[in-house]
Image 1 (cartoon, helix red, strand yellow):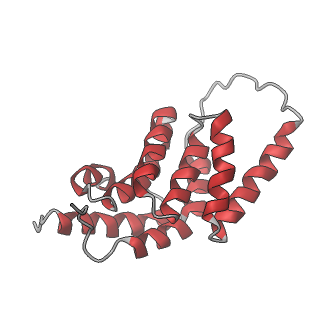
Image 2 (tube, rainbow, N blue to C red; image 1 turned 135 degrees about the horizontal axis):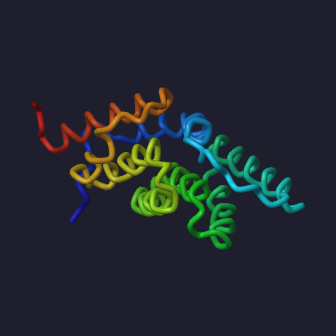
Length: 171
């Protein structure tokens, strides 16, 4: 039995959302609150510059549409840090680019569990991935609250509309 697909083929909104991923993720990192009394951080290990370059290269692969290569790199990173919220968000977005929405949902859920402050934008990605697997009722709760990130807000609103249509909620 085939999984029902949302009306209008939500893939076009996914691609628009993926284009805004970098902006939304950057805004999330920039806008999320920081603790008032932050303990001093240990000195950065020499690998920090290498890790930063690795992240930029991975994001560049995703921006270029080379999702399979980015997925391979992210799998390596998640092998060492399986609950890392940013790596899980990126893997979820990468898997959405590969149209592997079921697997993407799991990574977004892991990111939310690892960093509850991610609740501003990650639920939108989770909702979109759930919608594209035919789980509109579950997606609805993640899409109803505005995320406050303009680059992602349009994709959220359009996906929310698709949920309502899919669920035949016309009120």
